[in-house]
Structure formats: structure tokens, C-alpha cells
Length: 129
Image (cartoon, rainbow, N blue to C red; front, side, top):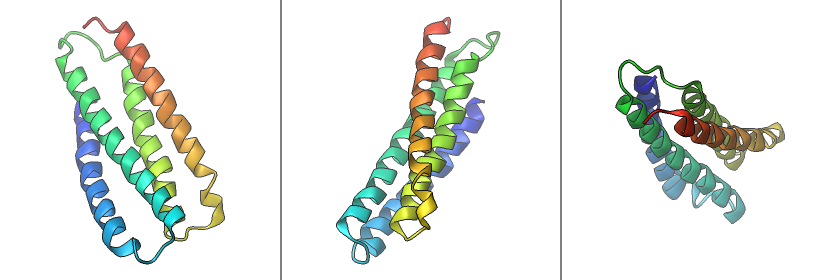
């Protein structure tokens, strides 16, 4: 699991940098302030959860080899990955002119991120480390 989380974090770290640069250079002049703000929120949450996944993977790697990774920690990582795609992805889409049905995806992605943090807390509390 740790390798999957690190791989997702590495690829998404790169994507977040590329999209951040795209927003700062290409979008800045072509969209309004509110859409640019939404796009920047997507970038911010994208980066935060890339770092969270790295931290989660490092924590998992610290667990003794004989210990099974607690399910809440696995769920946290999976929920963060899905949440980044839905939350940040929908904000990127909205900023560049996606259809209006993208709007309700954002809160769903946010909910996944929140539940991921709850799972992370439960997993840490239940771990033997």
C-alpha cells in the first residue's frame, strides 16, 4: 500500500506543479477572479493531500513487517486519492469551462477528503506505533 500511495503522490505532485504553472501563466489572463480563485483552491488542496499521502506512506513503512496495515489507514489513503481527483479535478474543470454538472462533484470530493482524515485519525489511534 505504501508504494501505491507514494506513486500516486509523486505523479500527482508533478501534475499539481504543472497545473499550478498553467493557472499562473495561461489561465490568469483568460478567466475571471472568482474562477481563478476556485482553480487555486484546487491546487492548494491537491498539494496538501499529496503531502498527506507521503506522510501516510512513511507512517505505514514504519510499521513492523509483522503488523498488518490497519484498514482505516488504507481507507484514508484511498479516500484522499479519490477526493483529490473529484475535489481538485472538478475545480479545475469548472475554472476552464466544464459543464455545470461538475459543480456538485466538488462537495462530494471534499467529503471524501474529510472522511479520509477521520480514517487517518482512527488508524493512528488503533495502530501499535
